[in-house]
Image (cartoon, rainbow, N blue to C red):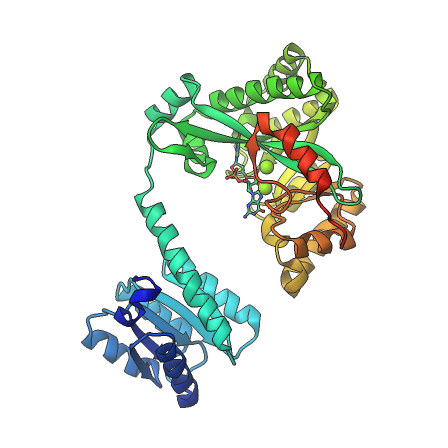
Length: 405
Ligand code: C2E
Ligand code: MG
Ligand code: MG
């Protein structure tokens, strides 16, 4: 899609059974410089228009509630006809229906630019159009992103190309920095810093996760020792794949590495992410219980997503619960998100374990969490993941920030 300057080169189709809504969109889009705007008052008409143009529209605005064919059916048609442009859903229905329809369309790999609750305002429309440009750029980046095979990653691990970044975890009541989470990156010689989402699953499926975990652990434990030597006592969190928990010797190996590095196991928290189903639940339980017996902290990561988190919470001796960012950011402003956040925090309270909120992106999130009485917070608003050498300076800057609500 073209940039804002090229808005007049973009072809837009508005589909809504209410002719006034159609007119409103056409007028607004015209005034924003979108010259080629067509409107249809039924999905069936819209299909004829799309077919006549061989689907060559850049952007479609579609109402959900229409008498002849509803928006969900129309979205299905778009998928079948291989529509490649952007889609904005509009509806006068409950916000939750709109959000679900949006997820549904995304799930079908349509380029969903957003959802607008009627009556929409010009500002909301403008925001969606602006976001669409950023999202399109991001998608292009991802489409061009390099994909890797096991041999690349194996060489990277052996060649020391994995580097750890560390993101601060802060106590909400006091603002005190109590620890960091270790997040691995691949310092690729040609592609720059590659995020973990591009290689963790590959490591898991290619049998490289153990080697990766060892590289991360060694670096993090060494870093922790250095911080300790310079007077910084921080809890060190490390992400552990469920797959590492099928090796019965894992608790002894990790305890040995901590002892070698001179790091007390009571300061190490293992964040367990369940990206794959447990291969052998009994072996995992054996390993997790022994890790707690040895004094490691155990954290259930991304709580509220993935498989059977509640079952895990019941069966595994976790002492920390990390509420997924999806239930934190914007919870103050969304009743469903807030309900899930409150329930998760309530669970942590009742189980008497530490609650950590992930994905704290702005001051509104921070203020909400303080009021809610959550224990710890982590997120871009507080500090982005950074190389270990930068942490001391970040901490002194952090203490100078004014965080009064
Ligand atoms: P995670 O453990 O849930 O880590 C939190 C992720 O959220 C990190 O992404 C972090 O950079 C990102 N994040 C932090 N603050 C914010 C925020 O305010 N907003 C948003 N939207 N995101 C925020 P990252 O570093 O890309 O890591 C992604 C995931 O990769 C991690 O999720 C973890 O599951 C996995 N991972 C990272 N390092 C390792 C590792 O050493 N071993 C294993 N097995 N998995 C790892
Ligand atoms: Mg984590
Ligand atoms: Mg997480």
